[in-house]
Length: 131
Image 1 (cartoon, rainbow, N blue to C red):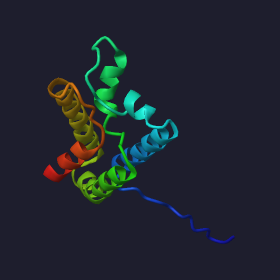
Image 2 (image 1 turned 30 degrees about the horizontal axis):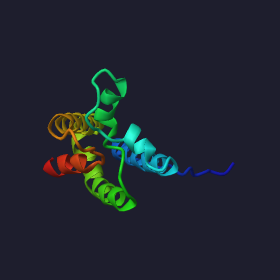
Image 3 (image 1 turned 180 degrees about the vertical axis):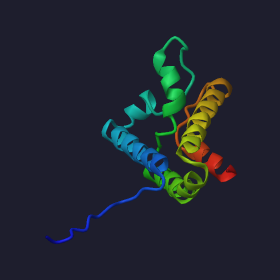
């Protein structure tokens, strides 16, 4: 019987990679819906607090991107910084940083900038730079 060698892929930063894939999926969905998904799901803006999607958008706005260059810039920074940080601090800590950054930036934008929408992972990139 021959020894069969199995190819095994080891991922050292599952949270960062999943986050990047979610950003890519959100961009594809937004492109297929001609930007309507960005407005409905992947942007945070002043809306009624009675509407449940207002609270969802506090977190999902970090997945949306306005253009391919916007997405590429954020993904490049995330993929350069993220794996090192996740290796050093752990997956739970990086997930916590991503979620807290999303909520704080979403809430701040909701309160301070009523006439505009915010989307993108630039806040997460900045948080990673600070780490």
